[in-house]
Image (cartoon, rainbow, N blue to C red; front, side, top):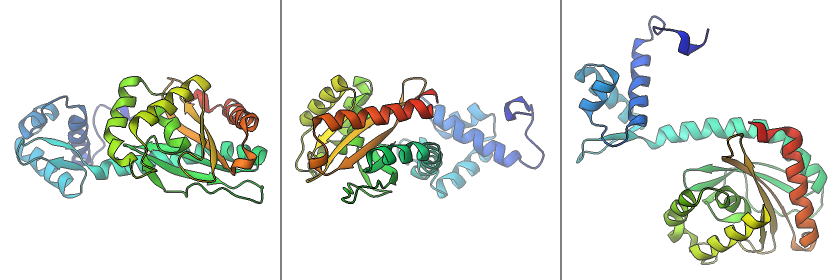
Length: 257
């Protein structure tokens, strides 16, 4: 029986059920998420609600602003969610990365979003003897930096794209003093092309091709990138690599998620 079909929580789990209801209430709050509002939303006594909130705050799952008295979701909760998503996506796309690596013989990377960062979730080494190791698994950079980081935002709605650019504009200066307008230019070129190419833009002696992966609702969920030395990545091969990635996505059915 599915959890949503159960009218009452299992015996002995009332406190867990109440804690989850408090987290859900905070996540659904549009404006105000003060103690009294959360108590009304969850139909819990004020004292019980406050006790649950205190425990969640202590564990970093929620934040409490002492001035506005409002509660919000904490960083630790996002870390847990991100870890779960990362593990799930990495497991589901591993065979895709291996297929691309076998065909291109180059380094293949899986990149996902983590707040305003791009996170390298996985990589597979190809058979070509000269390897272009652009980044390592677990590496974080601002969204928009790197072929994969750009692929993750270039195909987003304009409003969301601009939100990320504004949030990261100061951080871009750490990477060859790249300015937001140049990220916008690269994104515009990538949209017209259908994939991202970085010809030693973000890293010297490395040319990368990255293709965004969309779910069935057309939301960008990840990016697969291939990195190689510039001598192996002329215009013709860049296009071929993008075709290999797109073909793999179609074969693996990742566009049906």
